[in-house]
Picture 1 (cartoon, rainbow, N blue to C red):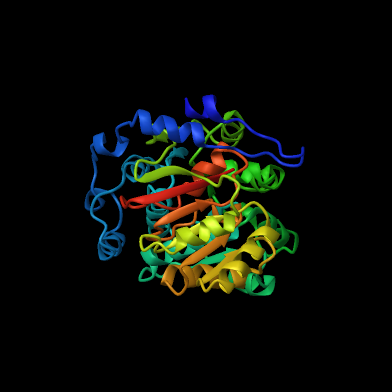
Picture 2 (picture 1 turned 60 degrees about the vertical axis):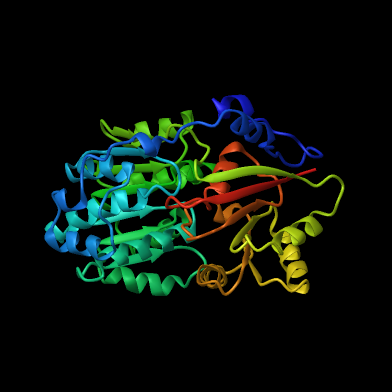
Length: 385
């Protein structure tokens, strides 16, 4: 309902579109809604899933006892070999929802190959890190194939015949053209953040990859938002899929959303005053352009703040270094374009600041989803003129 009523765009000089969430936020304040997760009754436990004892031990070592709703519903279906469309809010554990049953699949048949396609480099790296956390004692190998990193190293990794290949569409096709990866070997395909892939124009690349994968495959689609275009893609790429949806609405329960009225003041001055507050412990700031984000970073550094930035002009090692520094607490502020709004799991982000308005409703939801994760509270603030 919110999307239908409030997904309006406002042109600035005819050059780009923006989405102002003010109306959504006002309605949330007037009519708070109950949380889906508070009413959902989990039916399974990790110890009760039909997975190998080695994998159960690995899951337990991470302190996981009770599945999240998306894991509770999706894992048994994937273990049964079904095609699954998983729809869940960000931060609900959907990565583990497909990794756990697929790791079990590989343990039981080492000939199995799993191809995971993601829209961004950061998400691919994050998935590989989570895969490693579950499988580091299970002798399961993986390769990350993304742009911005040396392709020769990725070619070498593929020669080891890893069970899992995680990559972005463009780099996967580059490797295919060099005969370094054979898509026919992968009878399981995961498409993560499908809506973002379509937004970024990856559909032709994804279709080329899908045509090369065996027809008798298991296909898994995971996304936080679904529209008619996404449904069309899923319908073409899956066979009798089971849809698992554990989201009741897009606005996140653990995120306090508010608007900051700039009222003619310089936005950077308003942001600076805000960042001095004690409660702003770990702040993710979103801007519209690469140049704007870089200039904002320089200004904040001059003012004495510990800050770094990630955007399309940064190399992949630079982006990973900035993310690592932010995760470890070496910097307090990370500035980003929307390259960071999808899929990134950064713990304990206290605040998300929309320094520039997002382009769409979906971008807004994914930006603010970087805070309020894992049942922790977060704050999302949007600057409005």
